[in-house]
Image: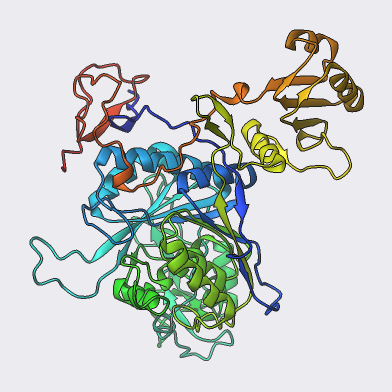
Length: 571
């Protein structure tokens, strides 16, 4: 019997915002670059985006779809606490909807070998896990790492002392994705010795067998070593190596029979070989290895003592994630920029980064922090471990205003803040074209293919102008023309006369594409429609407005009234 596919459901889940793909406007006065190149690996094209992070993610799609190697996000935890820089305490269904909208775009931005890392606490972790299973596929769930965020016990804890957060890890394709290995610690290396003075150096005895899996059949296996010892793996186990490999190790004196040479054989696992490959990461991350909340607050106090960010993450935690997920030169994205830890760490590690932040701390915390990183004066966090001396830079962007706005009579019109170039770039994004204005051909403002172009203008084009454009474009190319109007011919007549031209009027042709004029989709509770009625009916068994639950896929399970609210009301 086919198992029903389970998915998380909540009131309002079917509503998806029609996001406007905004353009990004650089403000050179807020961008910052090192005066000179420090190393050959300096990164200068990093991006700090000020604005709503859902709109910013949408703005990045045209350029970065499939290019981001690692996304790390530290979203508001929805705990009911009032933070200085975030209103953190949203109703569950609204929180899930806002997270879903962002994660859908994040998935599109990730490369085929990319991965997503989310820090979250117990309050929403398990809801978020089911949501991510639905978006990324349960088969692409990699791990839930547990980070020890506090090292002291809260004696006034009402129930248990909360000392950990979760790090949910997903891959775009788990079967093809492998994390990089961590460097070995000194404590690990101390377990290796060289009692027989082997030329390969220190080693540790490890078993020649492994526990047999359920799919393996037990087969008779014996091997006789050159000293005459005949060996078989213990019952219920299988040999780790074929006979030929055992023979090779035996010839190279890589088998250990104990001090007196008469004990069961073991493999000599050499430290020199392990140092090359590194060690897998555990799923429990202790504060001594990856930092803690107190350490993180001290790091940001060094940037802004008067108004230190209340919920930062330690640099060593982000370093662990980027070590596992990326190599130097890879793109890293953090759409909840916070205090700027991700950008600071990625910069010191030679990764290219993009951060998005809407709050004022983009200017009071992130920019000053990154300036110190680039200038080399930030010697906190992981700086000494990375021998950081500064270098590189970043470009500061803000989201452009909405392309359309209503005039005094309530009609949509082109925003007067837009010049011709801005309008052309925005319309390229709207229609899936790459904005790349030609220096010699005025109507080649963007392209979809080598022979498919876009031309946008607020002019009222005449029959003669359209005829001239059709001749210039030629029969082997096509041109999408977006204009205020045209004279002397209808759209149908134009299609018959000039099959290489497609005519659209602005703004009428794009009115239905987006929610125009909406600038804030943030996770700030003050901006949310908490009391708005929901247009969809509530079926039997569906979670209430303050509940979320699991439902069966109707394609696989049509039993009515069984959509149980397995996740109870936590209001």
